[in-house]
Amino acid sequence: MDRRVEIFCPKCRWEPQQEDRWVCRPGCGHEWNTFDTWGVCPDCGKKFDWTDCLSCGARSPHAEWYHHFGRDPVREKVRQFDTA
Ligand SMILES: [Zn+2]
Ligand SMILES: [Zn+2]
Image (cartoon, rainbow, N blue to C red; front, side, top):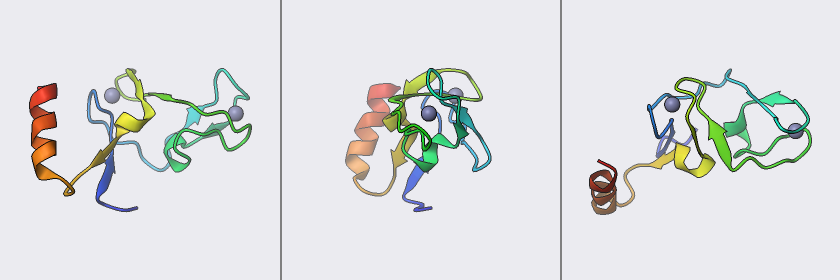
């Protein structure tokens, strides 16, 4: 995995592991690691814009799970203040 991008829950910072599974629901019931496919069910192709945290249970937009580091330090700082 590209280490410039880290994946963790934006609410509790829980980091999903390779063996963690999400269920396509409502959908086909397929189980897979949603971060392997950017939230797209590999079985039926349904796209999930929201992803449940398996640790704290909070639902966050899938894109917010991806955290980019080392690209734009100033903007990262501003964002930290915004969300603090
Ligand atoms: Zn599915
Ligand atoms: Zn969480």
